[in-house]
Image (cartoon, rainbow, N blue to C red):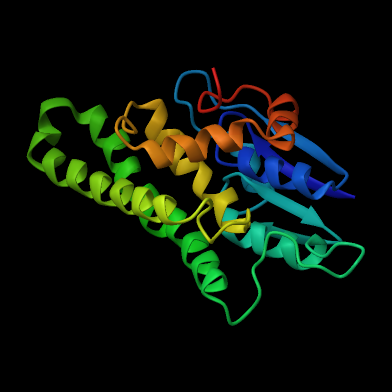
Length: 214
């Protein structure tokens, strides 16, 4: 049995979505954020030294970091009964290159300015000198996402891939903070994901999630 260490209202929600899409049986070990600080509880450090979620346990292995978890799950469970690859384009194609690119882009580039905007928001006026730079970086990320989604239905072509499972959170976070106004293709992407039955099942299992459909 696979176990996911899931923190409420966090990026681990997208792993629940992937698990539901794959049809894998899994257990949830649920954790709650601190009511005052919104930080993850210290007990997560007993699972992985970083003390963050998501983390999965499977066959004696512990896998942390969302992108690594997506790669692991697709390597182990991402082939159907007929031998077809699921959520992974064929090697040697542009779709595969885009899949790998956006799988890493989600956390490597897209989340950084969004997190900077969040953290510097706690500083008040002291953060004003760098706010224009952060806003500009967020715009670059969202412009690039819009450009990519105008060209393709999903981030790596016409089929849903692991890249989309990672990219949903940055766009959900941007939308929750009113940053997707005018980004039609990005909004259509989020709406398309929100309508998927597996995504809705994941919401039911994952608990409170402020970034999902209202």
